[in-house]
Length: 266
Image (cartoon, rainbow, N blue to C red; front, side):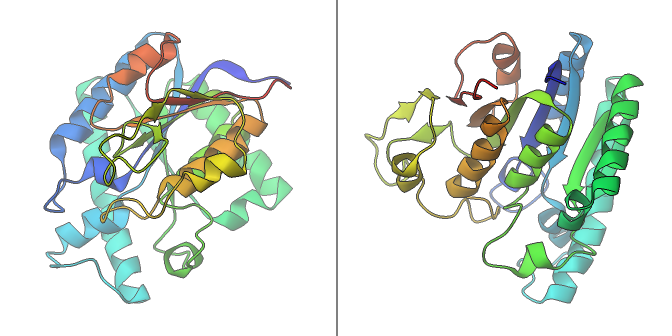
């Protein structure tokens, strides 16, 4: 069974959902909800993979800095997840859309029965016109919060796993950078954006650099890992800037935005 050509997975990172002060960026929530709702009205099935639970929870709990201990991180995640879903429900509701929450652990992807149930759940929600909002279950699962080599990397890999699971035709990763560069544009002003990458090889990984923004945990390396997984299953993957969610209109129309990692022909 091939890919669903009208099915899109969009991943939004912590840096897009919060501002430089670490406060919730309400305008970003609103613009994202508006654009995704409009894209769905164009006939596409949309799945949103959202980070930000710990950051938003930290803000909601009036913590001055991101917590260091596991128990406080998980407490912040529990509070933040509730807050994030409240905001998504409010803003998507403004555009007459219904959302659903799906929280996943890495183990959910390892058992065939669970994977089949998840696929059926996604398909049922999408058939009913519901927009699933997916996040890592940080309030329960500690491996992703504590490990150095994160499986989901601020949900970059999670978004690719969801795209593969749901047989989406496109994965769009909204980041704090315009796309994939030949050098770190934050350090090198002459860095050039690479518009299309056909093959993700060792040379491309060497260009990836280190960690992401100070508010998010996923750097370019985790985005490349996500693109590698998705493109290996034929899914076109785009990395672009979350400050401009309206770029999704151009992406669904096949126009060049950010960096396109071309899905392999299967």
